[in-house]
Length: 238
Image (cartoon, helix red, strand yellow):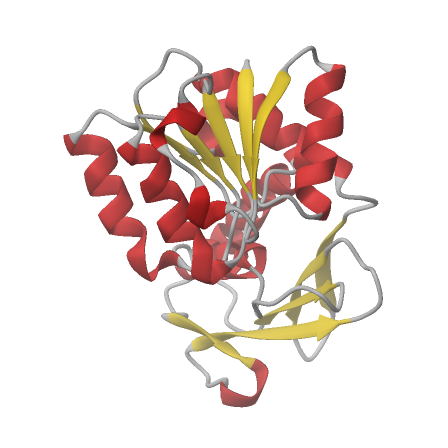
């Protein structure tokens, strides 16, 4: 594939490295320094774009690709207020869009375990549930998109929980989410169930960005010649 990387930061560089190892080409690199000068001609040799930018840029970036009929794999979090507008464009214009809050294969297995555990805990009201997420100090959004996905998985399966809230705002009917920003941590997420008698915890700890980058490239390879909206559930056949 001939790939455009949108957001040429640490993740963009990791994606580039792995894409080249898998015999793909990087034909366009877009970041905040050149995005305003990009033209239709720049997309002529692009088969697909992988977008990991900033929350305030993602909606514009994906629309720019759709305007040029370029399939998009996006992993930017913190911008989902406009998500439905992109899904509508994807459906009405037969665009191709793959979105995940986290592209790690392990994290998506963690999502599945999280929903199964929440379903089991629905009948056990002695257990209170919370989420802890830790990332590097450069991460802008808090809670992380992964933590929000975990919280939503709990809310969908535990009747007594109807929303998620940040630690200081939490109430009895919410899932409390605690966010920490430390050093260069790639990503750590814990789901904790605690009763007066014991504690159950499941955890995912990322060792590096490489797992996220590989998942994004696998997603890109998956949507070649496809139309529509896809997620990691489609890729992993959950």
